[in-house]
Length: 169
Image 1 (cartoon, rainbow, N blue to C red):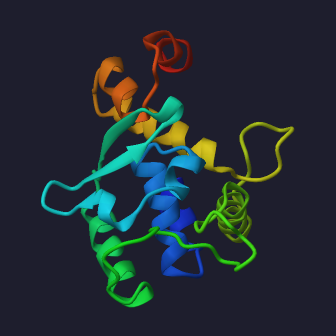
Image 2 (cartoon, helix red, strand yellow; image 1 turned 90 degrees about the vertical axis):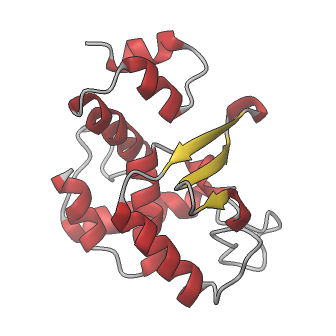
């Protein structure tokens, strides 16, 4: 968790801070993060509807009060109070999807990692990447004593075997 705080501290924009926190504290995949719409967020329950793999929806819980606060600031000051549309709109008008791309998410995370002088634990990979933050989320949940069934639900794994293979020991 300390390395996540260091990573967040080395972001340049509130948008990037929110991206990293959502990846790390909600265990999202890049494409799931990219597709979040403002109307998918429920601040009454601190849940976000996630459009996951194979068109399966799940609810992600926002575990961090700091993330809730940052999300509200982002919506108010960066998105000017918009109530609909993508949470992270396309950075370029050439992007027909209308939302940030997984490649752009990679760049946000890698840039923060570089500024924080953090390195990928896998030697062949030089940059910190979004998937490392997803693994961090799983480890944090396990360290807090949550069951593998809960970790499976949070991460949106369709098979318990996947969760067992990755985090079972």
